[in-house]
Length: 146
Length: 450
Ligand code: SF4
Ligand code: SF4
Image (tube, rainbow over all chains, first blue to last red):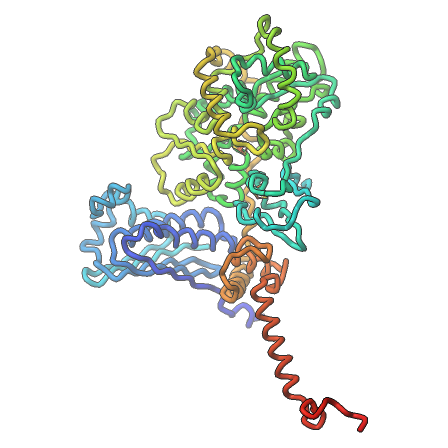
């Protein structure tokens, strides 16, 4: 009995994100959504995770030089991580303010860069953590309790 | 709960097992096993995609025969506005309505008029209950079921309004019963339908316990008999007009008709199930936050493209547009009339629309995770060609079917060939390894008796 309950149950999926590739943008978020649905995660949680995943993926496509998105699912929680290789955010606190955006003109024309990305991810998640270094890249983690 | 009734079904005699349909189904509801297709009832949303794509016409939508109206003492026809677009050079809606009466109906109530009421009720709700945005139209039942199956997170965005067909049936029956002093149970209301999903909704209602509609007759079935009597009808139209619908109500047959009648700036109308899916995904990602209303229709062009229509959808769409520009509008629903209707009817849903988590692998998340890991292991081992020869729509769907215990990996012909090749190799090795004492093949075969 105890052996059963101590057994680790969980799975990790990761997705490579290419900078500037808009044909593929959003695919990782869609796969994550499909995965969570098949696992029978509560609809409300799926909605929050998908919004966060979509925003993070878009951020990475628009602003970064590429990176990786990872989702870790266990019966207790979902942990979402986004790691890119640069360029990094100069002032993280400022970036967390609604309406702040450094999106370039072409991205704005596509309807992105309203400066809602990061605050939105934070609002959707139960725990949020971000760390960034110019020249190094950004690490973002969002946790959702099940 | 009763079983799942669906209008869309398979005519097994005609099915060749060609697998053309399995990839087109938006909910992966079709499998081909033992040479015949079958529909997984819990998954089917009655969108009719498989009817359109089947080259052998083995997928059909079941509706009632015209004779079914004689099960009722009094019969009311509820024509969908799509019906008006089926006839060439139509100059008056009344000739269609009178034609229906000549076919045996005692009365006619236009679903376009029901749409007029639905419009007013939606506006009223937007004003008084401030529903969650974007509001997703619930008038296409295939889209509502799609939301239940594939976008359960969006159920709370569905417009809380019964369909024009239901609204029309309620008013038509009440009016007839009052005017003629007859019992409501003696009246049969029949929807003249372009739509398989609505035919399903009559027996398997969405958002209400029981449908007020008693049966459905497909436009395909009624088109012939109706065309024959319509010129006779032309004379009677001069005296009495049965038409009450506004041009906006008639416009609901085309995609965009509902959205444009609501007088709101920010709405989006999209038709064709793959397009609807794309937009629902965007809504789910929170991307269309400035949108107020989304009208999604499963069929290309809207209901004019329904699976049970006679005329080509583009032609019908154009005819309707011409008709609308040519004929005069009717009086909109008067304020008083709407107020009275509000007192009498509750057109909100009276039964909750629930998610249908048919994609989930297990009710328990730990078991679901284990099954998902197994699914991925199996999937990684499949060829990834998505050829459909196994009868599942994709390699991933086959992996899912295997995990669910419906089938084995040897449904995959590539896997089967691999297995046969390995077996053949084993055979070869075994025969090479026969004990030398027995193997005399070089010297003329086995001679045990020597
Ligand atoms: S009607 Fe639509 S959902 Fe149902 S089996 Fe056919 S394609 Fe699939
Ligand atoms: S678009 Fe119209 S005809 Fe087609 S499924 Fe929806 S309601 Fe039915």
